[in-house]
Amino acid sequence: MNTTTHLTTVDMVLRILAGVGFGTLIGLERQYRARMAGLRTNALVSLGSALFVVLSAFGFDGGDPTRVAAQIVSGIGFLGGGVILRDGLSVRGLNTAATLWCSAAVGALSGSGLYLAAAVGTVAVVAVNTALRSVGHVMDRAPDTGKEAPSRYEFVAVTRDEDEAHVRVMLVQALSRTAFHLQSIGSSNTAGGQVEVRATLTSDGRDDRGLETAISQLSMEPSVTAVRWDVLTARDEEDL
Image (cartoon, rainbow, N blue to C red):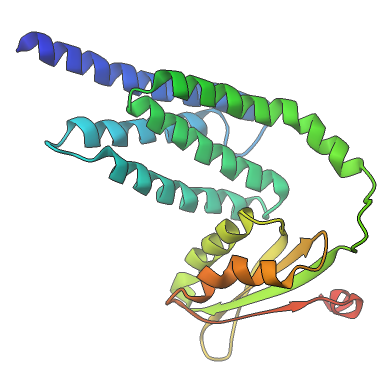
């Protein structure tokens, strides 16, 4: 009985150490590039994910680690949204949030005892943030060979003051899975005591249906009372 307990304790310690270790490796690259979420942040995110998974697996009889993993994904979404807002919603901020999300996944794998998958995931995250960096710069400098001209959109969601941060996070998450690029976001109070969350988006071409699909879930959010979007013309952009 004592041997089993000892092995279980050792296994838990190994999972926790793996979580903080892999998160530290991811954070080293971020710290070297002087990103907001650096060494300690990525290590803590990975460690926290591992701790929650270990808690679910060992802390309760008949616990379901998959439930905790699902809640980790939601929690990191809010944390990543806060990082993006603080960075002005630039591309660098989006990449920082995505890295935190990956650190949480690596921590969850470590907490589940999937050390090989966690190690491969760590190497992949570091490789994407380093090797693909130069590739992205080359593609940014490449001339546009498409026939469609870039389009700019303005999206507005009306919500309550206490739900403003939640709506911002949902908007960022919805756009992160699309080809739209978030240029700016801001809020202003309305005469009715509500808040307008206003975002400016760009896309490589006109894609009205794609925008409607991206914001459809946000429009069904109970805290959102109204949504609207429009294509910005040259005159509209001068007025912004």
